[in-house]
Image (cartoon, rainbow, N blue to C red; front, side):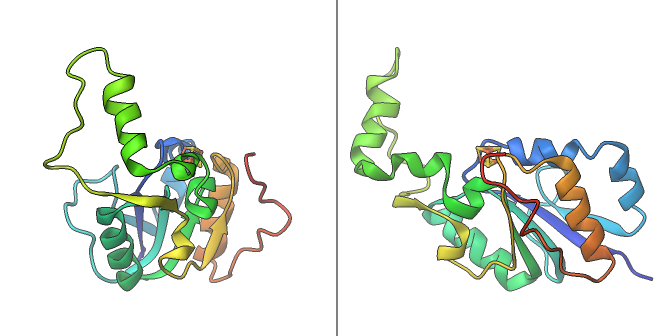
Length: 177
Ligand code: SF4
């Protein structure tokens, strides 16, 4: 039987959700028998591939590049999991949403900088006016809340999907947990 093709994606997040994924520890070896990781920060693939079965996406959609990336992920993935509170609600990246982009950039690059106080203007993606949860941009199949979601919960979701079932997260998932 061919392996399930899985990908992980890092948008506007702190990588804590990926760290939680890595916390599967020896369970990663267990699921490696039936799951192949084809894209993500943990593998050396430059382009998001076609025919992905499951994509776990960390982070909010904060830039024009994020929009292009999440649309491509959606087009090429059968199941898209919003992994973590930033992906599900906007969470930490959305804290900037009360302020105009120009003020956010000035705060980060000038007011809080000790050296070279200037806002970069080239080679950077454009910040959106608001940092948005993924479901505002593309349809999401599974909402895996938590900041980060615990490794055990990520493991259970993967196991359920490998068994051909849609995981029921209504009881176990908690925002901020
Ligand atoms: Fe980091 Fe929490 Fe956002 Fe995950 S949900 S990327 S751990 S801030």
